[in-house]
Amino acid sequence: MIRAIAIDDEPIALKVVEEHASKIPFLQLEESFTDAFAALDFLQNNKVDLIFLDINMPDISGLDLLKATDAKFQIVFTTAYSEYAVESYEHNAADYLLKPFEFGRFLKAVMKVKEGLKQAKEDYFFVKSGYEYIRINFQDLLFIKGEGNYLKLVEKERSTLTRMTFEEVLSQIPESFIQVHRSFIINSQLVEKLEKHQAKIGQHQVPINTEGYDRLRALVIK
Image (tube, rainbow, N blue to C red):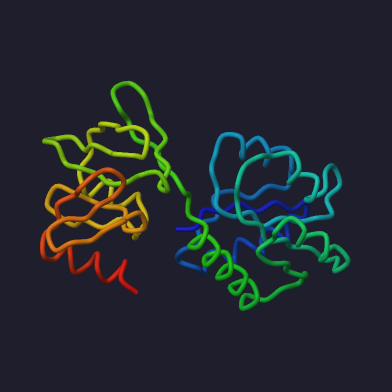
């Protein structure tokens, strides 16, 4: 689900965005704002994937609004003024909708956003260990080992113990991490040596079963 908000000083323009958005099942328009400062306040406390943003607004322009927040999101500009097109793409806008726009053009913009979000997944995640939340960078994560009710996440320079299931952790890590054994998930991109029953990764030898060997071989032998 793509979580979005719309910002435009014209209520009629917002209504158009709301009507178009309601037709797309994977798009959830959470809020609409005619007040750009209220939108900024919302962004301080809420994470969104996408903003439909007018550029020419009375109190603060859409371009200046972007400079005022460090939040990360995709942008689709919605404006009646074509002269802003070049500057809008300097902000890595996913698309630029020139008012008035039909549903088909709106849907095309949303599909661009969907593809962009798919390609720009986070390169880390957080796990709880004791009373702390630890950031785990995928590029440093060698493998994950099951230890009773816990998982041991082994990185290049450290290990972290967290109370999670394999199912939970697999839903949060990239597809390059594959389960190669009942008790092990391995980062296929960091495998240095592959044998029938084990794989070398860093200074570790990780056991693998037959199915894990076949899956891993398909990824690392090209």
